[in-house]
Length: 395
Image (cartoon, rainbow, N blue to C red):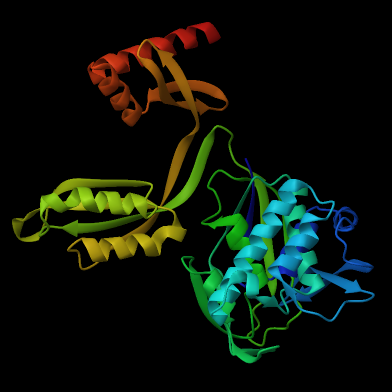
């Protein structure tokens, strides 16, 4: 799988994301040609290399010969993109980013997304940044986007609404549920456009442990940081081993010795509904010789806050431990097999593109068993016989 990982310890903006992708190997002429499919009028794009805190980065700029001075609604931008000559997947992803921006702005201004009037975000250069970033990722054949902790600035910025604090209110809405890093750097480090691109297209985590690095890019912002922090965004593009999914996840744990066993099934259901990847309870002997349970929850980093809320609200724990662990998963696919009792859903596992094994879905087997008045064992045996025959036919 081809992955793009964004290092955001100096923040991110739309033009920095696009610049980093161009620096990683996307031809700016190819970006420009695709953007001509949008009815944006006459414009030019350019890049030049700059130094930020001793680090060389690429600066991306767009200049319009005539830019209309009017605000745009989400409907205006949707029509602009839908009526363009862009590829369908580029349209879908670009509109997803703008929808999240509109929802964030609507939350801040206590209105609806379709009533939001974009100012800076609706400017033509921001449309170029967003659509260009989606196009750039596609040109690099990126299948998955990851990003690290999101650095926030401090102080204030001036916009159409006047002077607003940094991070901008819309930015804070967009990064809810994601890990952020507060810095003492004065100025806006993470813009609403940058936040919306990353959180719409990607997931937060570490660089995959088995990633083979193919290319890197460094996009530079326009501001000079007084703190000396280089105003750059780095992207790492590479391949992970096919047939295996190696990801960094969080393991959240709590020791519990004073909760009724009757409550555990409900807690498990709530944790899984909140996004837990796996939940287990292991008997342990705790301090003072008390028997208890170690409640362990595996979760993606962007669901950490939701899991914490469930654990604190619905268990008796007073504290949690959290550590990052590496998880390797086989490539999976869903299928249906025909048995004498009816169709049954199964999960197939692959390694390096080769089929390894299949397992029936428990709930589906229970349904088939009840419908036919037979035991669950008989359904499992029928599924095993069918998958065995399929394996023999393949060989």
